[in-house]
Length: 275
Image (tube, rainbow, N blue to C red; front, side, top):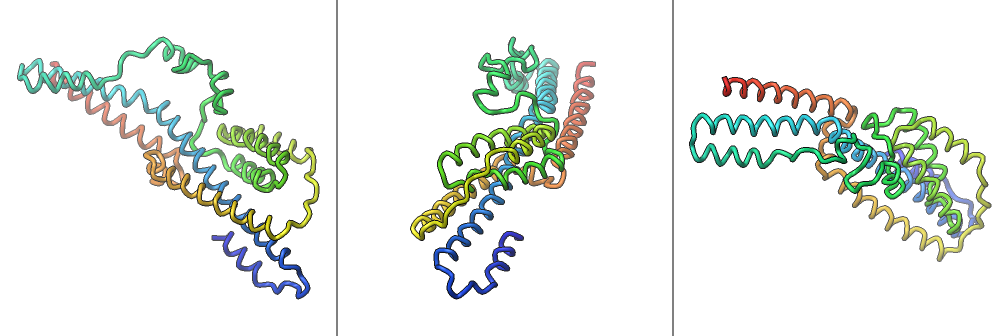
């Protein structure tokens, strides 16, 4: 909303009469670039929250879901043992089949080795994912502020030369990884590194053909980001996050409380059946 308002306000000023048409087009490109960067920051922020929520949901709530499956199987088996009814026996077999198998050797090492037999450090090098699991779904406000400032300054879309774009892409990859972990100290180090780094050369005014091509590329980039945003929002985790946009970490706690209540109910039910 504010981006569009700012663009409208900026367009009200009368350009100088002797201004080249390319200069007006250049301003339009700059406005479009800034709007796209803000949109990409929002999409990346949501993607980090979706990834973190998914990982923390599995890490914190996975054992509760497994416990519920085990209790459901035991309850079905207890009922079948009492009744001897073929239908109850079938349900008991289905419930037992739904229970996850015993953890493998890799899982017994508490995530020191993943399902592919890789150490977390090796897996992180291959996937650019953080070694340590996130502590929270949403990084702290200071981490979010640092990330937004770095993304606005160092975003690859601001580069015109290929070498500068590659430098920015490599840097932003590190920024994104630090932000995903909520690592404020590393984000501050990266901010200092960027300020101390080489200053891009002043760009000459582009010709109209190049500017039109740039606008077309920006429009295609926006379409791609819009598709990614829709995919994130329509995912199961994205739908859950939309239920608690202000405090996704509290949503995890509420789900845990609900699961714990269900575990208690199942345990009471099982105790009544085996007495």
